[in-house]
Length: 200
Image (cartoon, rainbow, N blue to C red):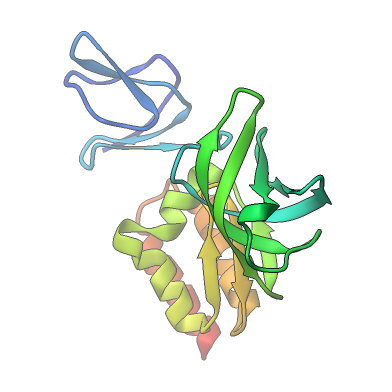
C-alpha cells in the first residue's frame, strides 16, 4: 500500500534504513514529502535537492577554467571543483564530464576525482530525487531504455544525464515519463510499451 507522507510523519513502527527517513525510539519518520510504499518499505521523495556525498557519481558541465582548477556546474547548491594537476585529459569550459565525489568541504564545494570527458551528445537535467527510479532496481529501467534506443546514457546522482547516439528523442521521452510518473504503479510496463512502440 502506498501513501503520501510529509516531514515528521511516522511511516513505520520499526527502525528502517532509509535515505530520507530518521529513526526515533525504534520508529521511522519521514524527513521529506514523498510516497511511502509499506509493502516494499521504500520512500520516494517527490521533491528535493541533491547534496553531494563521498563516492557519489556525478555528471556535470565545466563552467570555468581558472587558477589551475575547473569549476563544474552540478545542478546543486554545491559547486564542483577539479584540480587541474590531477587531470590527464584536455578539458575546457562547456565540456560535459563524469566524475566521482572525493570530498565535500564547508564552503559548499565538492572536490571531484577521476573526471572523464563526455564528448558530444546531449545533457538533460531531471529532479535528483527521481534518479533511483530512472535507474531502476538492479539497473533494469535504464538498461531497457538503452537496449531499445541504442543510446549511450550516463546518469549522475545529481540529476544530470548525458546521452549520445541512437534514438535520443525516444530516450529523452522515456526518462521524462519516468520522472513525471515515478510514484505510480505499473510504470516499468508502461515505459516498456512506450519504448517498444517508439523503436518500431
